[in-house]
Length: 491
Image 1 (cartoon, rainbow, N blue to C red):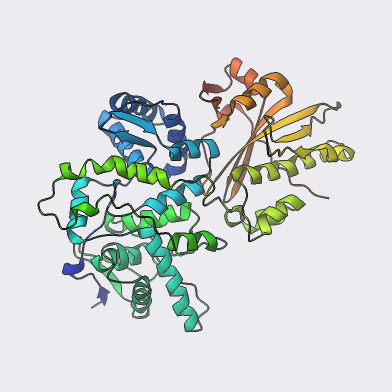
Image 2 (cartoon, rainbow, N blue to C red):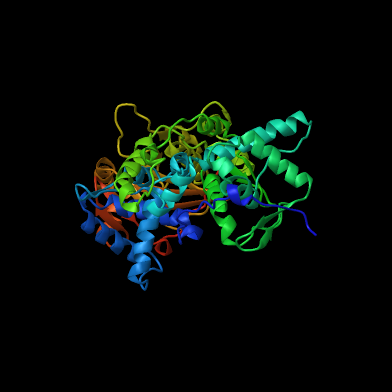
């Protein structure tokens, strides 16, 4: 008979939460809905809900969805992302700072870091009835922080054994050794003890057994199980990968993300915790209505954790080694190879890549003697409405004013919107055909570039869409534009 490990009944509590039905396309969905939420001004709760529902129905593939499914999308977006804050006392819903940040900066990696930093149990992202059960059992648990600590402690154990292996974890181990064990979620079992348990279970080749569905789950690197039991822990591990906190190996195990130790230690040393539910511990006969008023405070708490300068994406940790090799321009090398610095924002690496692209474009066009005129515009006091001053390279000495709009994500993005400030739109209107938006989308294995020349004219001729909101929210149909190869400077 196979040896197996299971959580004893007295310590077993299955932790679960809202699983978005759009998870397979989550990065594109989040960019779309951050943009849509930013278009909605503060409104009474019902009006805001109606406008967001309309936006959900307009998302590709959603036109025929039933109203119940649309409502589910809305609540899932709210629970996972805190894109809006609904104050039922004042009957006003407002778009959150997180939504504005994601829409304007397009940094999904930094966004998921904030989501994982705030993700805790109990929390306003799950139903009040489920929170009551967690409170009754004494659960106080921040999964991302705990998982990172387990991996750090495991690395210490392996190092003490002179092992060259790196501590790793998979869905099943996270489920049965962490998420479903009250000894962990109530703080009775330490990350070091969990790391020791996981390594011991591997040594003994134990399978994980769940009494609820009478299923065995392997701990020896088999492909991800499809059972619902392990999906919740699997979701958190996936979100931590999106946040560039973890790396997924080919065998399905997760390890600490290389080059992200500064952020990882910021996570494990973080002391933030939402204490809005503390008043209910030890209270008998709790009812969901008693917890309901706490929800608004929860979303305000999540929004309060957001700091634009915190957890800025370390692009060197996202780009592959081959990408680093080809980006040989001196400025890019300084950004990518200095382990003590990160980019000012996602835009900086985009500007560096486009700077290299422009140098090579003009060199190939026969303007090598003019390359010194290409400049990244970086003024501490004002923004001139574009990022790079380049040349057309068409037989004239005309300028090309380039505004770089960059998105960095783990997966390739298929939505093509971006925000232009009032100044950028005004300068585009003034310089007309000499103004270009370079829409650059970077993912782990792909770099895609679209060039939109004279965006104001494109808008007036119905070739792109633009909606006024503190400037313009611009979107375009990629099938109407041809992507450009991203050129790399070569001496």
